[in-house]
Image (cartoon, rainbow over all chains, first blue to last red; front, top):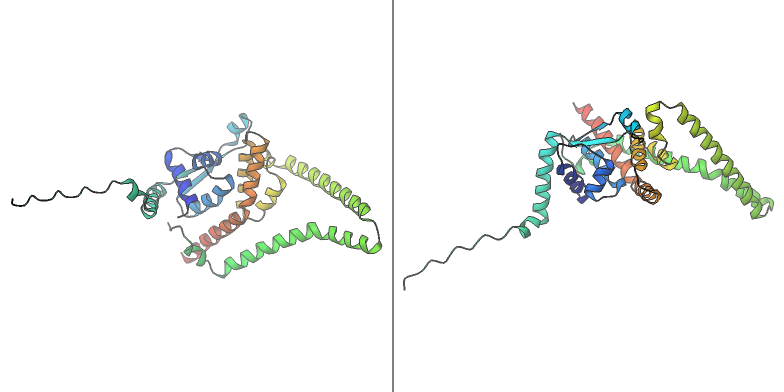
Length: 111
Length: 160
């Protein structure tokens, strides 16, 4: 899994119950806007993410075009958590962050 | 549900190659249609001994006329579009709308609408330009991914 996919999944996992549109994902992930669309397409094709278009009327009332919202599916949410966890394990980040287990205390021998 | 990975791209078979070839052909054809007339006129004028400045002026005027014609045609097309789409189509530059034509099926329309939506919410012109550059830089990856996702989906349907 690439860093870009991890960033997009991380952004979507920040608020799993909220739908995010393109610019929000761009800001949350720190990626360029052109980068996120191929990633979102792959995630959508894999069934991890669903999308929907906003109703045009409220958008027009605010004077802007309708937005396309993305949200993790239930299964996508579970898989994203596992994938990110696996990614962290592979990068060795978790090993660096986790303190090493305490060494067993040496047994006191007979004096 | 399937896993994400390059294995799925290898599984798509000859259909994917044909689609890629078709896309590349369309790009080359579009480039040829835009560029060849200018090369042809330039070459003819050089052979006829017409000074470069005159040829340049003629080509410049032709380009302006073509630009005005396209703008008028685009405005007419936008005015004929349904009310819901009109504001979506307008903010995306022409280059990005051309890119939309390279994507499979209705994917292109949706992408152009989404790009237009993002560009409309850009804070200022510099941010808008930065977004457009970013979209254009990622066009090859976008086209590749779109076709790959579409073809793997159709292949899955065939297998079922």
